[in-house]
Length: 350
Image (tube, rainbow, N blue to C red):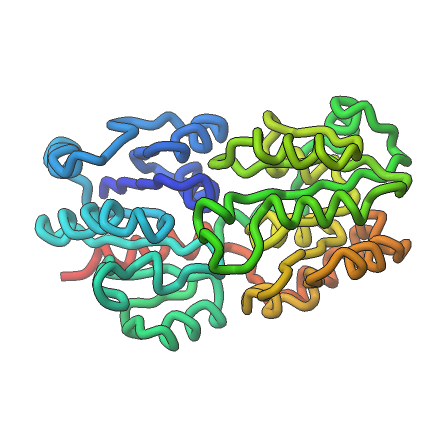
């Protein structure tokens, strides 16, 4: 039996690879904050949780002797660390696949000194749109394969944890209006390139919900320290709850309405049947426009308030409407199986 090694360092990458690992068999290395995602998902990690020393990569591969490697992708400052696994695999003639998990950072995840100068053998992407964008940015077409995004499989199939249990945890009745704000570390990852950050947007959201008959739940990103967000909330005087312990799926189960910026959480929320608003002042990302059936993008406080005033945006969709919207998204079921099919084809190459 072939031995597959799965590696991730970013929480989003780990979430995308978790269904693949569960469908195994595979050995899993969870680096940095990815390790907790795997472990909370019931997958035991082996090996190191840090690969800052290149000797760690070589030692792991020499000890484990995998036949295939499947990795996630991370932020642009992590390109060289991701690439050292691909390079070490290539040296040992181990086929390498990197799974793209989001419609952001196409070039940045694979580039250091020149566009796409660090690539695995194959990059598995979410859909044809992502493939076209990768090619547009300069990635060789023969390195790309459309598989879908495995983390979305369960949501496309309608699975969510218990809504009642989450609402009880928050002290909310079933008829109360709960808005979740999904934060993300924009300031850390992007600096001032976008013209806004998580604090800017949270201030807008707080002003927009002021006086509404709703409870706002702030869900920080796993890589994000919530202290600065707490300061913004304190300055606003708007009552807010922070959710630091539940998974994204558990949080979605309890939500009626979801707002955020460009996190994959927004796509998950939409597939879970929640009305979703992407708030992007100054500059909008192309990827949110790719999903007009799933979410709405706005840039100002007045627009947020107007969107929230629409009664349909205060309640989850029923199962029929949710299924219709998900079908219109163009996202396909079965990404987990297609990733394993791809790995199987690579293992049979001469």
